[in-house]
Image (cartoon, rainbow, N blue to C red):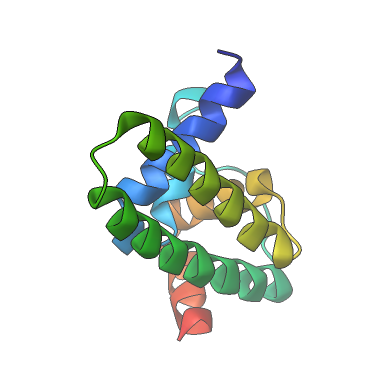
Length: 125
């Protein structure tokens, strides 16, 4: 499995398992690939707004897909559902003008920066 494929798989699984955490799940997908500490990025007000909107969509999709996945016992069907959920979540992020990488960078920064996390939370309300 390529790093990209592994990362995409980790992305969706982290999101579905921890959907209530909202912005943390997608960042967790890259934990193996990133150094410890906050990334050195500047996040504009527009990016905070886009991130917050994408986060809410990803959280909603995560909750919906988690419920659906809990209702199946067929491994093949579960695998297909995971792929569909992943595609929808990535689409939700991209619909808000962000790449998954940008989304993850902001999520990781917010985990390390309480002020940024608060800005995101306020934008999401």
